[in-house]
Amino acid sequence: MKKSTIWLLAIVMAFAFAGLLYLQINYVSIILRTRSEQFNETVKRSLLQVSKNLELDETRKYLEDDIKRGQHQFMYQNGVPQDPLGEIINQEKYHLQITDSNGGVQQIELHSFSSQKFTPRSALSQQPTSDIVTTSKDLQKTLKRRYQYQGGLIEEVIYNILHTANLRPIEERVDFKVLNNYLKTEFINNGLNLPFVFSVINKDGNVVYQSSDEEAKPSPSDVITQVLFPNDPPSRQNYLKVYFPTKGDYLRSSITFIVPSVVFSTLLLITFIFTIYIVFRQKRLSEMKNDFINNMTHELKTPVSTISLAAQMLKDSDITKSPDVFRHISTVINDETKRLSFLVEKVLQMSLFERQRAALKLKELDANDLIVSVANTFALKVEKYGGTLDIDLQAEDSTIYVDEMHITNVLFNLMDNAVKYRRLETPLKLMARTWNENGKLLISIEDNGIGIKKEYLKKVFDRFFRVPTGNKHDVKGFGLGLAYVRKIIEDHKGSIRAESGNDNIGTKFIITLPLIKS
Image (cartoon, rainbow, N blue to C red; front, side, top):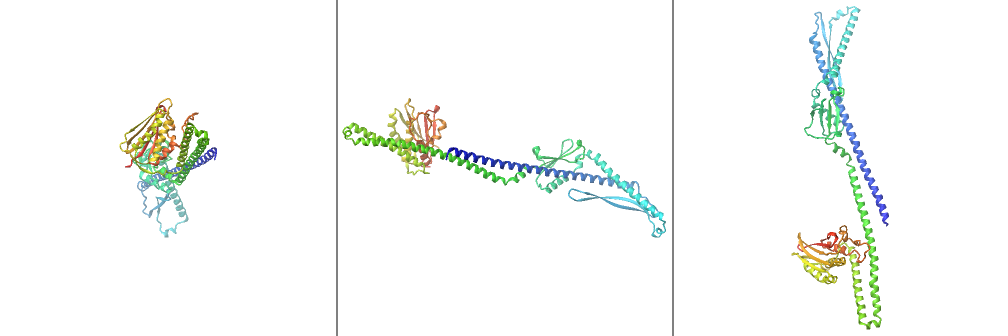
């Protein structure tokens, strides 16, 4: 698959996932906003009804007070007329009904008094028709007088409510316990069974009453305000403010169904990104592997053709008669055979990466002895280039459990890289050290070569990776040596890291291995 095709698929999938997440987040925000508006409207409707209930309570109180005062004046100030000829006092009861917000009917009992003379039935039959007319007119006058009295009573109540009620302090007009019950009842009736905090603010802006002692500071958008008595003059209006501490939790509980969808979408997005990363990584490894095979094929042709040519020359009888020429051809065949063996070993190293874990033949070894053995073998090659190889064995506990062949190859690879990437103008200095730290064995191979730039220190352990050198190709390789080193060390449950000196001069590889007692 072409790289451009992979990028196109990645962009399309990323756009689709981003659009899906955006729609989900937008949908959640719309739900929260709608639920918040519905919540506020419900609270405002409840507060308006509470305000009406308080007005009805105040009106009923004024009616009761005025009726009692009116009855007292009628009965005791004006007196009750008495007539020795049989006049009697009739008391009639009337009921004024006030319906509250809950549908309950409040009745106020009104009393009216009238008088009439008692006339025997025998005498009534003897009265002329004119007496009946007179009695009817008296009854009409009594009803008119009663109507005027009741009308005056109502007018007096209305006057008191309009002109005197707002002059009283709010704490005298409202029973705060009753107000709390009204609020709780209205909220429950409207489906808001939530804890709330309310406060009453007087016309001067001071807090007269607060239902909770907690000094909570809600945001202004969370506080809902209602005028307690809307018909009061604007300069004398009192306010009721209500705050719901658990409003956020209540609103979020309505969108819990969307949480799994967002989580799964996020997991799919992460999986998609990881998949794209793996695809690109495998494509890069595939390209590097192809380059390796092409490179290796080219490299194999040279020693094979050289050995083939030398073998044909050995068939010539004249060459066999010349010892110097024969010795030279034998040396060429030997060198090319070693080179061919080295290339084959590289192929075997690459095949090692195809397995999850190398087949190790572990045994107990002394790391200090192993370092001395490898240094003695490699010292001749270092001296050939005019360099020096020093060892510093500080590790007191150096017993490890490793595969001798692979660990030896690791040390040879690191030292061989020091020789390959030396600075031609400076004599090579190679140092091998061992020491103990945190119950582990540490081995370092340090040189004064050309070094590695900091941005490549971690990449040098990747398969087929080679540090860019511009147009210089004086050191041949396939980018497998350090990858092989890291794999072997990790298979031994150890670790390796690379460090470079100042100005990218010199490189130090530090290997950490567990001791046998660990």
